[in-house]
Length: 286
Image 1: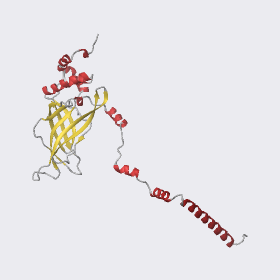
Image 2: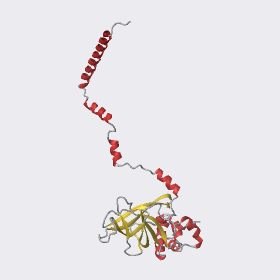
Image 3: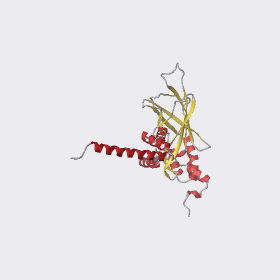
Image 4: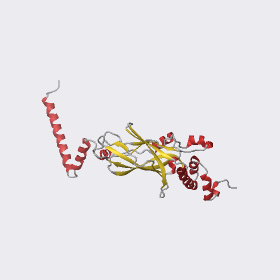
């Protein structure tokens, strides 16, 4: 007797999955590809019904901090990613570009309006993201040097899911950079940032990878970064003695070798004559 849910058709599974909450759907997504596909459809409906969105926190130099609320907008049909857009239209963030100031960054992303069942509350607090959980493992900086253009910052996080404890999940943040007129600027290098969208796959909401496991995986996958300066230093000759040695070897030829050998023999003979002459000039031994 089969006890697997795979014996049911897609329509019946869809009816079952609709009755579950968000945390259960995320757990079902880790079961198999078929469940992942059905759970993604149900997750999109849950996000729309419950008005689930994202809270993004921006900061620069730990001074200028801004909060932004984004709502679920639609599902990208090409790749199945969830697309979030700002809740308020024409949201503007003011940051500054300078050679001595770091770029602004996204330091925190969390879910909002997440509703869970009381029976699954404990499991949700332990394994699934809540309103207090930061979905980022480190801050993500984005450049603002480019003027009057739409930019996209693509980064990744590591999650546990899909049969992998080191799942690399990409996400993208799209924004526009505008330089205000001179009469409105508060200081040099001011930029007006308008967030446009935030795109991520459903696996972005999987449980975070353990910190210890991520640390060891970073050591295993470590690749040293070789700069152009280091590369040129390796190719160049390190000291002057090697340069002289190489130039001497390049100048010597098969024709010059016998001549150099004769010169050395003549020098040895002259040295012997000089030693004999100095011996007799000193006088006999006493």
